[in-house]
Image (cartoon, rainbow, N blue to C red):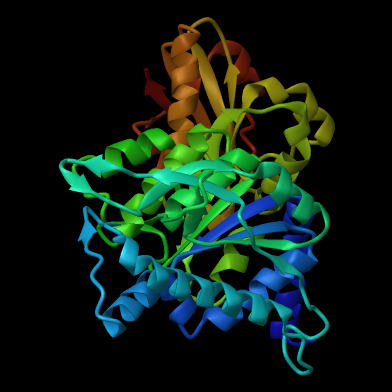
Length: 435
């Protein structure tokens, strides 16, 4: 078996939990007209079809800004942008509707394609669109009359869910209909946001030209709403990526479990985000995607997998499953999307001290500050118990602990009971830290 084949098989096996978790769930995916024009859009269509075949219920929301701009210019119509929102004269609406409608037809046609020798072979999909979005006029803001520009009033949840139950993909555009029969031009991001909230969707996904949210060249892989508030402070929302982030925080606060901002340029980014632990873009969730917490009995298997390689190398003392179960209340773990990435134990020795033990971080996640963060978590626990100092016994990690503020001491500094158990055969170094 070639290395490439082996890696593929391993990836496929690792994706199984995500396939099971996503089946039957509702995803709202929003992409602008720029994505439709990009050369990678045909691959995105194939990925949509793949998600559909895996039992995921899809609502696709598309924008049309560049297509609208082209149409208006072609027919010498004006529809200026004010604060990144289009002012829509009534006479411009036919050309806007033509642009929006052409994109919808293009998406429907590509989803219906089942050509041999293509990824879509045998996967013809029923795509449904309709008057699912009720709108109202946006009105006059700061003296500007936005005319036929509107905002979402309501989403026909029952109709959309009925189509999803019948295995249809629902397509929503950047238009909405009033109760008086008028058509309004809407912001597609707002359509996606309101659809996700109204449907109680499991995920809201924004496809962006960028990989996700970058801060000084560093991709922010996970955020929570409060972090977004700080990030957007003094940043203009008229940049698409910032508005995506604003919508992500709003969705999260209104019970959409997770929102993703990923690239439509990078081939396969959607699948990588949904079916791998580390993803490809930025995840926004109500609770931290990666958290440090106290361990529970359900974590024992994950702890065994994490600790066993280090035990085999002689770095840690071997601990049986029975012992881990007995001592589980002493352990804290770093969890990332259901996987235990790190662990450490805090064993009180007497009324004033405790031992830090079993410090381990998964090899793939040792870059960064996870070990230090976990140690800080234990130190906080120790302070809350009124302890004054920590000990650690180690054979190969003394330098790292010294970097964290420990100092090497003689074994006779250990409390009497722990000194009796001290394993001189391992010749462990003893380090101490005052709290």
